[in-house]
Image (cartoon, rainbow, N blue to C red; front, side, top):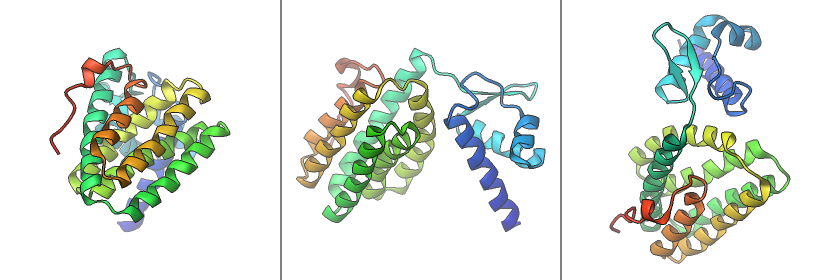
Amino acid sequence: MADRKKFGATVYTQILEIILRQEIACGEKVAVDSLSKKLGVSRTPVTEAVQRLAKEGIVVLYPHRSAEVVTFDKKAINDLGLTRISLDTLAVQLAVRNGSDAEFDDLKKIAQECYEVAEVGDIYNWIRLECEFHLGLAKIGKNENLTKIMEDLYLKVRLLQFVIYEDSEVSLNMIKLHFDMLEKLKARDVSSVISFLHKHLAYFYDLDEHSISTIRLDY
């Protein structure tokens, strides 16, 4: 049973990466038979992986049992952005309260690596490390419920970032804000960290100041 579970997790990870890399684009059919052949496995672990991805919001299942990769319209992008900013704001507040300077130094290593891979145009790892940085804030805050919610949400975040990726110059300017955030985190300046966070994320999700002005949870 343990080996079967491990094998299923491997197949899931492979299919998730195929989708994140846009080898199956948003709106395209997720063909179980084709994936089974591509991965050299039976239909069962592929079907189970697709069902899991549907629960996580990456794939949409239809009544006739077909599946497609989720698509994002403007409202979906705005909604995801508002949710992400709200959760990240809470993560920042908990990180300031519960985090140590050593943990912030470890997070800085992720930020530096993120900047370096973005600088050479490695989009896949830039997006992976960008999400790892923000999930790191949740982990430093030491609230397991928040961390789990954000891990699930950030699967969609990673996919969306691939879909609406613009150019390296914009990415680098946004990534530089990670370092500003870390400086204020170590100073325990929660208000400034949240301001940098909102600036970092609002542009990407096309959110105006009015949309995010109320996302200032009490600290």
